[in-house]
Image (cartoon, rainbow, N blue to C red; front, side, top):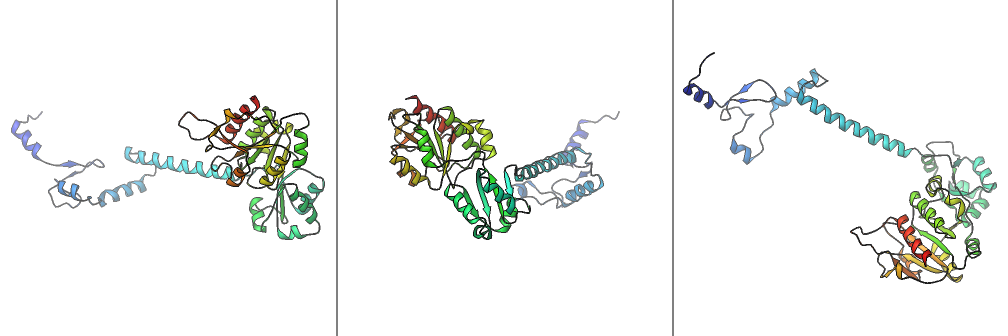
Length: 343
């Protein structure tokens, strides 16, 4: 073995060669004329220029070996594969979300017409102007609209989008899981076996999961009915029935064209209209009125509309002690119904 003196070691130490991490080549010191390296002054003053030789070498290595055997390329491959797999997951989620469950859908002139004359419960109908003005459908659609069924006049292409290109002949409908009743009949039924019945009216509940959970809570606390507006509301779909866990079969539902006019009708029948609002100064625990009550529950983001708030006799709030500023609509409904039925 060759012995190095102290002098030889210091001379070797003074050699400022730098070893590149990507290869086994040794480069000259940073004070040389090589443009690929910059001095400390350049490092702090401006960004160093990209090493074109290094980039070219990496690209050539990628072309030579697609399996990326080296450690550097392996890390790059892992990251790219993770991004690719995450993109695939996003695409699969979008595809699955776009798949609609058509178990409760009917389309085509003859099929829809037969379903309508058999008085099957209907949630929503999409049809073209030709169908609405036709002698065969005009009277049927007019009667259904008066009963609270949402009927939308749309283009042919829109129905094709909803049915994913099916042969719809200009009309499609979604069946409901339960047949709704008129508001007058709901009022009569609510007062039959109860002195101070409670009815739940929903304003802007468009999520079927929230609607199903509210129906479940309302039936559990012995409420006498549910009022759903024709627009800005989820319908009685299969998802709602599933979330309600059987409660939908034991509580009557009325779909109304206009919620505010329905509240006026309830007032004429001696119902107090009570709305839930986080801005109210009256806690729900201090409300002790003994009377038929309509509890109005709004959406999570907007709450009860301003026009509906003006129709309320009382606005109540649920006191919150934590840092959370609001509750889920179905949770707020369950808490309020517990307080109102405990009095």
